[in-house]
Length: 223
Image 1 (spheres, rainbow, N blue to C red):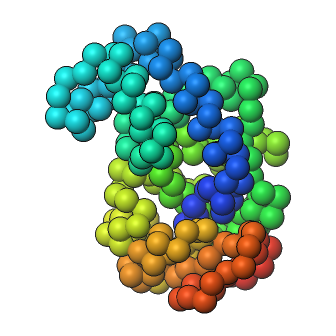
Image 2: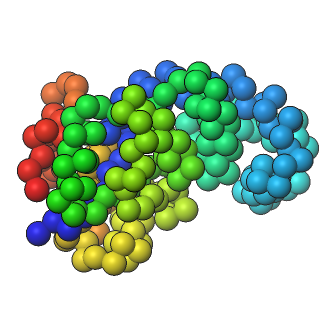
C-alpha cells in the first residue's frame, strides 16, 4: 500500500517550459552580476568555496561567474550552482518578476493525498531552497505546507538507484511503500531498481512501451 508519494517537479508537477524558458534564462542573464554583488555574504561565499572544491582550485569571482554561466549552458546538475540559482530566484519571486507554475491537476491531487494522510515529498535537481520558492509562490498561494520533506542532488544523482534508497531510508519507509512520479524514464528506472513503485507522467507526445505505466496527469493517478 502506498504510504508516500515522491515527485519530480519539471514536467511532472510543473511545466517544463517554466523552468527552461523563465527560470534558467533569468539565472543566466543575472547570475554573473548577482554573484559579484553578493560574494561577500556568508551564504554565497560558502557556495563559491564549494565551486572551487568542485574544480580543485581557487577561482576569482570573475572566474566563478564565467563557470556558472558555462554550467547553466550545459544544464549541469552541480549542487553549488543550484544553490546559487535558488538564492537568485528568491529575489525574482519576492519582486514579483515571476510566480511558480504548478499544474491544476497536480495541486488538486496533492491536496487530496495530503488530506488522506499520504506523506508527500519532492525530489528535484533544483536545490531544496529553489523547490520551496517555486511551491511557495504559486497562483494558489503557498503549497509548501502540503509537503513532508524535500530532496535535491545532495542525495545523489536522480538517475542513480542509490539516491532513491537513501531517500527511502530518510523517509523511514520500505521502498515499495513509496510511489515515485517523474516525466523522465532514467529517473523512473533508477527508482524502480531501488524497488519503489513508479508512474510516468507523459503530458505531451506519445509514450513509448516500457516498464513504467504512463499517465497524462495527476487526475489519472489512483492511490
